[in-house]
Amino acid sequence: MVLSVLMMVLGAAGAIVGTALVYRSPDIGQGLTNVPLPVAVLVFGVIMFFLSFLGTWSSMHHRKREFAVFLLLTALTFAAVVSVTITAKWYQDRLRDKLQAGWHKSSDGTRSNLQNIHNCCGFLTNQDYPGSSCGPAQNINPAIPPCVEYIVDRARDKMSLFIITGV
Image (cartoon, rainbow, N blue to C red):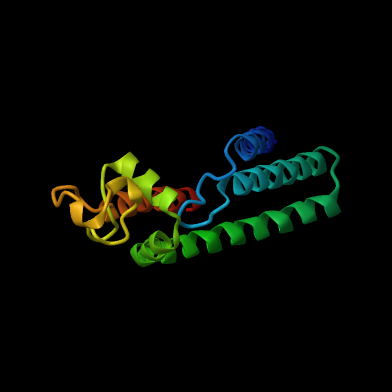
């Protein structure tokens, strides 16, 4: 009972944070991979809230049918979390290739923004699709590192956190 109420509070908090992210910065996570992170946080928070509410209500009122629905939905949610975690692990192993493809498809503004944040130019090398913030390709300082290490390491860290959270 206490755990269900705690999950309801966490679900409501997730829904509030997701709603705030949707209205404040809906483009988080869309730079290279088109992941709608604020929407995912909002949906997950709402699902967690309603699932916890159903479990709390059915246990308080001794409703067997509603409790069975709660258990079924909990099992389905668990299966979804496990499948997403496995997919995230699979995706993490192919992350560099996916990010390179995303880098090549991204706009000059996105590449320049990432290059300014990490103080780097290009993806695999300085000449690999540098953004306009690096200047003309022939004038790029060879001492400036490529962005691959910063971007892949940061994405891998976030994916690892996602995988650990899922497990």
